[in-house]
Image (cartoon, rainbow over all chains, first blue to last red; front, top):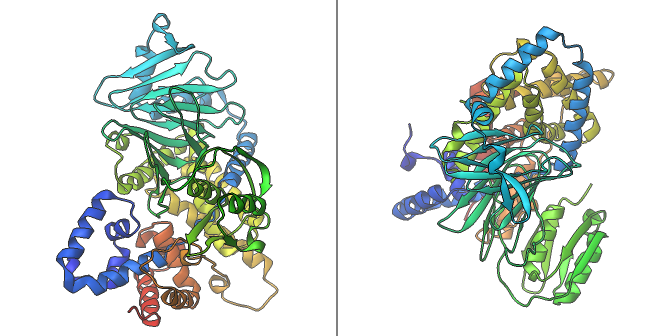
Length: 352
Length: 202
């Protein structure tokens, strides 16, 4: 194994840990490399070059995740049609295999579930509690074949009317969710100050008591998160997350949006004046939205008219700051902005 | 057994990436055994990667999606005879690439006789063109870097894409591009060397 001090620029560019430092996706790696950089001044030129290369060689993820959902549904439909003739014997075989796949967790669910009498009210909702006070994770299968893998010291409450016209659960602690796609019945997780809406997918929700934050990481599918105020029950705008995106929702202050490996590091920061008018955009052209924003905050916004010509936006802005609004707009149309002295430049691939 | 990985603290991106890989393997195993739900999970997990990769070769998205659909339906039909693949993602990428090349040759048989494996394009967009740039890199350097990237061969671009965007190991890249592991390593290193030579970093 080559030592770091014998690394060439090309070696650095490819090393996973080095990349995580440059792309700011891992605290541990960032600490290590910052330290290494300072203690090896003779390698400064090498590292600087490798650093720029890693940044410059990042590739734009232009995948449209909405298309993915539709395509997957179609394939499943076709598969169901072709795979129909299942004999009785095969059916038994299938059932047995499914149980094996689910593992120990299923047993826990079937035999240890909290009996109906102990169901109680969460606010005004009747729920059923599942608590994991063991040292291992437990798998819960919900009535619609969604799975929740509850980590130790975590609790999940399921609405009694789960799978009626919506699917509501409450999470205290951490869990990995595998949600069955059902566009007509939104799957919603309430965890402390964060409300996560699911559109058929697998994702993580983790609670951190030390920093009073909730992390949501998407493995597949699409998810939206919003902050909820406990007192007023008011919720912020929905922030949509794609696979490999991970957001840390801090109770008070800035959220941090990251990618598993590629960096998209937008911090919603506190800046200047907030307007208190509500702006409601329904499938509005991006150009119109930007024009209004530009006028409201007296900032010049420049972008490629042709590229963004077909972009439309549906959003409801209340009292976010200018940069928060800009960030949300950028997230929606998959663009990035750069601030210059007298204007803001919006860059992106545009919309299909 | 099924989800041993996620019992650890998901703190770093490394854990997250490892989890996704481990999860993918488990889903593949269950799907192979006939688990219907696992098949759907497999689709949701890998469809985006296949769509992104396929789009590098063809701008015609519908054509790419048709090919991906064929790959997944094929995989479902053959599930009983599939092996316990360690890396489902690269398995699927190999299947897609083969299908795309085959389809392409059917369309273009009447044109010049070019070696099948060479007759394709590979388009990829590097972030410097649209990304929020770290202030350390000056604009002039970026323009030079951009020019170098444009001059890479399509194989070099594909190797870089598979290595840095799809995060694949060299043996996986070799499998997908149908080259030796040694060639895969060279492609990436050559590409990096070329970029460096043509972009004099101050």
